[in-house]
Length: 332
Image (cartoon, rainbow, N blue to C red; front, top):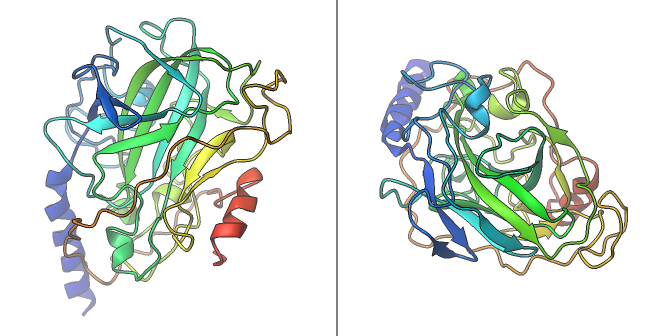
């Protein structure tokens, strides 16, 4: 029986290999602006994933220097101007029209002097997308995830960050192979300039790429192939105060967008590291579940235990834990 279960899992992984993707189009408030790679940096990795283990020929790992914006990324010709509350999305390239790998998506920003030429150094997470539909272990392999069947990764520009130019890094992590150390990372960078804010500094924790993710992190060794109905860990750092979290660990609260408390609002004139919670709510509503999404057949038993051996970070932490308490009744 165990052999049959393992074979089924392998076949499921093979069938999902054709669903690779990358991002080259920019959306502002759900409308495309510019053409392919007008604002998003071109890279040389095509639609191939980045992986710690068994990276495709010619690709890279999350420990390579190019992990921030993908292999060989070069500056795009233009920088897009955005403001607090704008919903910004990185849309799939090559005619792809829906992410069909289970897993979370993240949006990071890095302050730069010149978004066309600088590489970025300190990266802050402004958005996290997790599980939006509570349900069975079977749905957890497919459309329980907020990003399932959506054609872009997106976040909301916070009011708690200073004006200026940034690289914005959109990322989706496919967990279908994570039980075997083969989580797939798909990432691209957009060039943006934030205007209209008054924060003096960015609140929260920054990370470096490479370095933010390690091969043994629990979040990228998590198995979706067993009885799991909750994702009790999240990759990387906390979302910064003023940033947004979509969904929850188990999807118990549905497809809701929550703003992380703390930080200074755009109109307060306080330091970005302040503790007040005057940040305006994002002027965007998270989309409802895609009615036409058709889950692909997947095995019902896990081929590995999926438990990372490293020191993973529980989701959510610090400021975000208050949000989870309201929208997620389950304890991991």
